[in-house]
Amino acid sequence: MALKVLRALDVAKTQYYHFKAIIIAGMGLFTDSYDLFCIPLVMSMIGRIYYPKVDRTVDPKKWFEVPTVIASTMFCVTLMGAVIGQLVFGRLGDRVGRRRVYGVSLVMMIVASIGCGLTLSKLPLMVFVSLGFFRFLLGIGIGGDYPLSATIMAEFANKRTRGAFIAGVFSMQGFGILMSSLVFMIVCSIFEASANKHNLEKPSELAPSVNIAPVPPESDMAWRLILMFGAIPASMTYYWRMKMPETARFTALVEKNTLQAARDIGKVMNLPLSTIQEDVEMINTPNTRAAFSNTYPFFSREFLRRHGRDLIAASINWFLIDIVFYSLNLFQYHVFSGHLIPKIQMNIYKDALQIARFQALIAICATIPGYILTVYMIDHIGRVKIQAIGFFFMAVSLFTIAKVNMNGDHPNLFIILYGFTFFFSNFGPNTTTFIVPAELFPARFRATCHGISGAVGKVGAIIGSIGYVWASRDPPNGLGVSTTLMVMGGVCGLGFFVTYFFTRETMGRSLEENENVDELTGVWFVRFWPHKFSARRNEVKGFGLLEMN
Image (cartoon, rainbow, N blue to C red; front, top):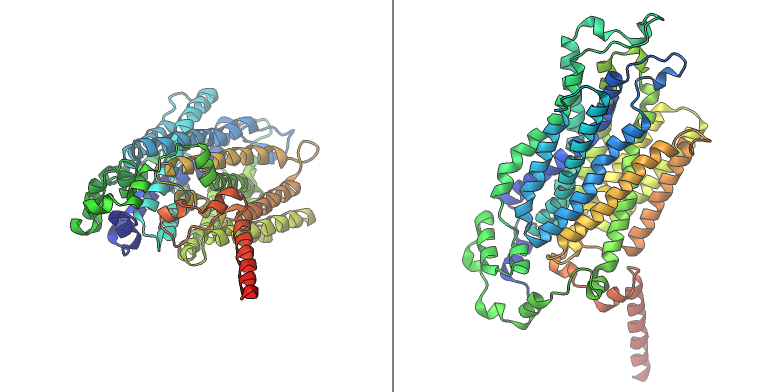
């Protein structure tokens, strides 16, 4: 029999505190996505500022570009920090408590966001060294936020709408992506309006003897302000994070303090203490004592028997989706190229503005609707089905885009298919891979396992980011865009396979029910085999009994 306080959480009606928790936890994801997805826009502006040379011997499309090695490093250093943050903060969340380290990750994001814009030198080398350091620190904070936010929301939610609540937290990522584009457009518009017209001269209008494109000196401040803006939403939620109580499941099941768990939940969810406080007789029942004494260590043989398959499946799924998802963000320039005005015909601000507009368009038309539909549907059709559907249609979309790219330029169709892919990544594995690890594992390992799954995912993001930059180059230097897209489609097909055969559904059950698996599930690795064999065995026994009668 479950503890009263946990049973009360599982059956509680949706209350004000649930929505408050979504905002508090979700604002971290909002900040995460803002910081992660504004960097491609910022790098386009940095290229104009620090690489202004006009080389008329090369294609003008390659003017003002940050060298590939440096650009890849700036993209990946944050992801490398996220790998460390997810592992470290996930483990700390299980060792010392979710609440105690929740504010630390947020402070790291605030400090790092401000630090990204405070490079004292204007020398390119010093700018990139400083930016790389603070982006790495930012990544650690972002990585720490993932397992803590997912675990806290899962442990506060009721079992009927838990998926929607966790998806609601993660959906703030879509609004963070949109905000990064809006802030970029607003800042660039303000700086353009106040700039000296001489410094806004288009590169195509330069005299043949001029080999340096003019750049407004204040533009070096614009990209810094854009990066520093990420500290504002994080700062706004710090106070409320510190006011959150520890989750009842950590207090009751890990610290084994059921009275304190009841007091904490009674305060925030308006439940009388008498209805959720444990009776002495209840605590001394065999089931409760067994639950408290079930203390097999992490990564022990018993842990692997019970949860090894789930951890491997969750990690692989997250790894596969992040390979594709982060590659898609780098692919967006190729998608929009048919609608972009060449950079030599635009000043620094208008060049950056047109890219930000298209990113905002994708966020409004594909990214955010995908998140919203997931919130609405996930507790009706389940995590596994949504994840499988998402992987399947992403694969179809990517194979189609590759075919269209081979046959010539179709800019409008490119954008539609690209948006379609983004929609099914968010109404699909990009959201569910965040949810499922928070629901499968025991309370004392929950944040750790979520952190491991997310860290493996971010390794996939690093591979996807670096791999796309190099693989998408024209042969013989690379595979070419079409072949790279087909490889990405194959990765999604593999994700569909892993989801269908290896991933366990968590919908409609309490967290404690999800962590308790039967013996056959622990023995067999593939999800549905034990159930089929068991059903077949029972069917045979049933026929045998009928014949005997």
